[in-house]
Image (cartoon, rainbow, N blue to C red; front, side):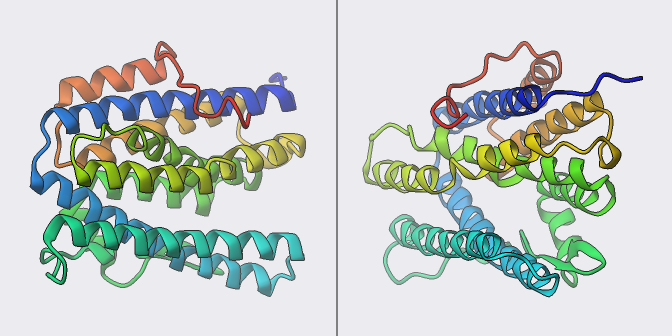
Amino acid sequence: MTNQPTAEQIARQTLHIMSQGASAQQRVVDAYMAKRTRERDINWVVIQAAREYGATNMYADRARLALGTGIGVREADRFAVIMKEELDHYRAYMNLLDLTLGKGKEPPESDSFHYLNVEFTAKGAGFHGESGDIVAREWPEHHRFISLWMKIYNTLPKWTSRLLMTQGEGGSVGWHWCMSNLPGNDEFLRLAAKLEKTVVEDEIFHGPEEIKELAASFDPANALPWDETLNLAREMRYLDVRERNEQFLYPLGEDELEDIRRAIFEDTLAPSDIYAAVA
């Protein structure tokens, strides 16, 4: 019989991988800064605004589905708080975008609002309309990450699916954490770092809180073997690195990305201390 993880192991090992993900994201951010251009600045802000907007719609979908099953007040409040946070973040990135382009100018022509156009129905999660084709064509790395994320949501045993879903927002806060430490070389970077600090404050607890709850309610009948779950978590962190590299217009090359992948899967990447205060 396969040994079952304890609640302590589940929380510790899951947060360890998320912390390694933040360390990996620091390499992406460092590469962006080393090769920074106005085009890269604009691109990451446009994409991030689209992500926040899409997340608002996603949580609205999930809230609607949950309400249909009679969720409790506490969970309903959680959805409402997250939706407000995502909308506030969207507005903040659009304000930052005004700074990068000049007040009142239109953003670059872009299909960016297809970027995270994912809908949730009783049948599962999927791209809305033609968004999947557009994302696959324009942002293939992001398409890989979201496709895996949807596969996890749609097909894996319930407990494993819920745990790995924390690798979405809970893991992505690692990128925001790295961005919150941008140097104050100019007004754009100062305002970007200030915004990212706000996002981190809003989201840092989401992943750890859910992980602790799930660890305490581990259900082996609705879970993959623990080693498989950990490797899927590592794959999500690696694909998130690749999609962020894409968001910055590819400052890291394939050899550097492969080094990051190897370090994540071989557990040789030193974890950041991002979750130390909330773990």
